[in-house]
Image (tube, rainbow, N blue to C red; front, side, top):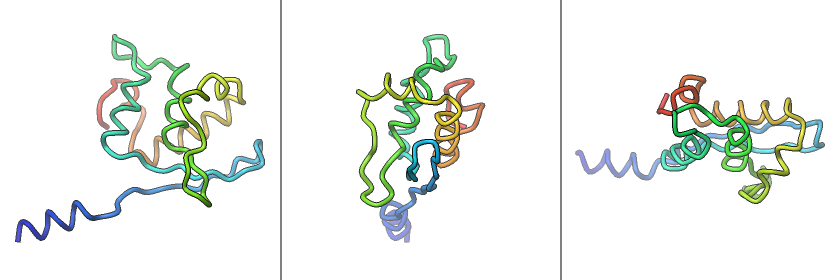
Length: 117
């Protein structure tokens, strides 16, 4: 019985997504929830040593890790795009980052203290 449940859990396709229209860029993107490992990596990538978020790193980290092409599933950005993303409209970046947080199951407390929310 335990093995059946284990197999069912491990085989479940449990990642969620949200398609987000970005009229400022003339595109629709898909924001895909990260795995548990990716989610931890995302949060730790923008946290300062004192546990506070580095806001300059936060939006690009969230967007790079979760934004994909809804038609192909390919990620839209790489770490090399972080600086270029920071030059884009902050309101747009925040809207995408908030969608990334929603699909990742993150909330402001997750960001504030750098722990699972």
